Length: 364
Image 1 (cartoon, rainbow, N blue to C red):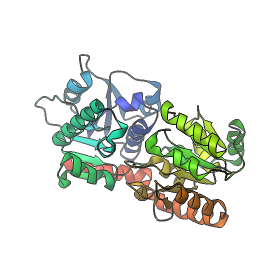
Image 2 (spheres, rainbow, N blue to C red):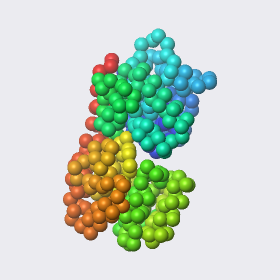
Image 3 (tube, helix red, strand yellow):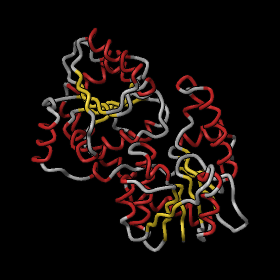
Image 4 (spheres, rainbow, N blue to C red):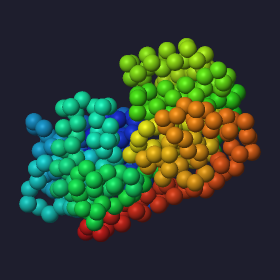
């Protein structure tokens, strides 16, 4: 098969959608090397360099013009004799010619519908229009969790028969056994505490860092946070840190390999997000053999499995109780981490590649 991708996120984003897009192409290229994988975008960037080194992956420059991603990319894929076009971030091109091609779109979440307060009115309208249009024109819709599948049916009114759940994985760095020497170097570089709680994710209201800070008030448990800051919300965080006398360290400029080491150095990973489409940081922690505290809502129990610890996102008291339970119980942390590593194998590369290829093969 010849499979074309809207590769905008592969070349433009270091996080979320970019990681999903690069990892998917990487695992498909690795486990199904006989196919050709075409990455369509206006230009290359360093973010996609590693992917383009794979022997069966090719960059194709989208034909220039106004709204070229929306109006040219699909026709370009058809003119390159692609069998399938896959939109990796909730969108599909709006214009096609008469050459046959099957269309697949991945929809990650519909948070803009569930939590409209986090978005501007115009952004919500644009997102909804794009996602609705893509869901209507796609031959198959990929949902990254059962929760997202339910939301696609509810908000976009897509038929269930059109939707397939194919989970996400995570970057290979989190599955690598790092030596004690490398972990010590990472610890020293970032001046990390001997024992700490870890939170990874954008510092914004939906991720719920504020309730973690409240839960740690006067606990003397160090917290390390890795994530970009949204200024308005970060001011609230700073105020709560000061009032609660919480020991918090914010890190930036962390490479993927360093982040993997930080996960492994942490005693506990905490991620009490109000809502997620999937929650890759939970998978990263489980592959790193670090016990997880996360939310009892949305898709997070799907990602965390039966041996993670779940909290009421609205309750700082519940979050505090769960932190203290694990912090003071090394054997319980170890037991849950071991079980978590067994569970997370369902998100390994080969499984994801097989499930996505089954979707493609069902279309052609």
